[in-house]
Length: 114
Image 1 (cartoon, rainbow, N blue to C red):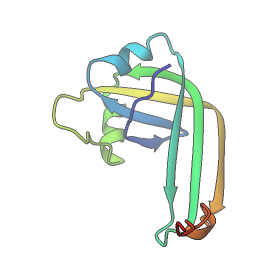
Image 2 (spheres, helix red, strand yellow):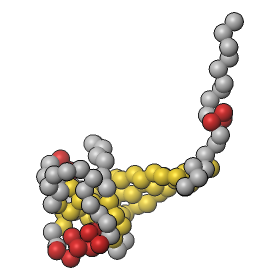
Image 3 (cartoon, rainbow, N blue to C red):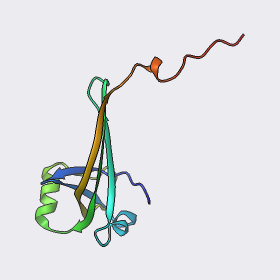
């Protein structure tokens, strides 16, 4: 199993990922099962969330899918050719949301050395 950073957009109950030639395209050959995780927090930094999607990935090449991705704001984060589009159809979605505790609750304060 390998982990890749990706940018994505939701589209009609699926996720679209734009990428270039290479390991991501090889990894999804044959509608393989993939997992994606997205984490974030609210604008105040007080509530965090994490969502994991497991589903089948397939390379799509329909011009309408590319237009949907562009209309949704899916653009490459790095320079270079990113001319492939992967659609992930979710089969399982899990997640959680939680309040972020104050830093003093993350670990015990350091005691001064005697």
